[in-house]
Length: 246
Image (cartoon, rainbow, N blue to C red; front, side, top):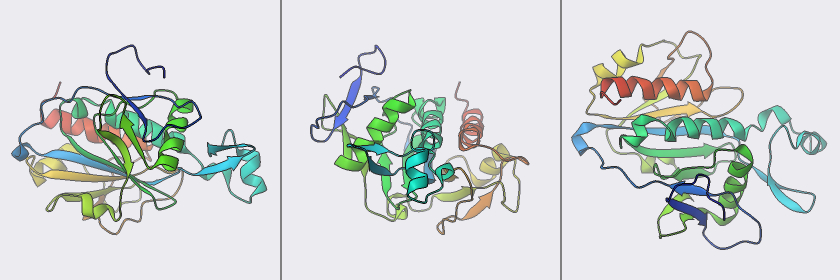
């Protein structure tokens, strides 16, 4: 398989070999993790569009651009099939200096089809959407993606609910443009205590709002609607400033 980048890093493969060619995902060498009292951030991406279907002779990850005719034929709204939103959100999280500094403590994706995915913060996912789609298709079929040069699972489908995977005492914050209050995030997290673990629940869908019943607070970080990627960028930037991560 061809690596995503010309760097000597772990490459993710399917849990069992399959007949089709699969885009690569790589995991960089882990950075030293901060001590437990230093706090950290966990992201939960809700309502992500990840659905596989047999189109023609092969299974494919459905999206609004390539499968509009197929979706309309099955009386579905193509506008709701946006796995590219999840791709952008994951790149924003995994590429952040917050993650590279070891402050990302967990990453979960909850799909519209009620599948819960756990993602290792050290994974390096494909940069192109086509390869990302192939990787996520294999995950849905094989239930896990592992590093090619070791036993570590970089992505896997896990049991629900997501709360069973969250640390006790972590503050769970939902992000929504329709939230009753707009906050200056740096002040908000400073007031809660930077040694805490924060769980941010962000919608990864094209329309609508999150309806997670496990959040402690629902806030907006802007007076204007933001994409999932920009919402995540604001969260990461706020913590990077607070923790002096350059």
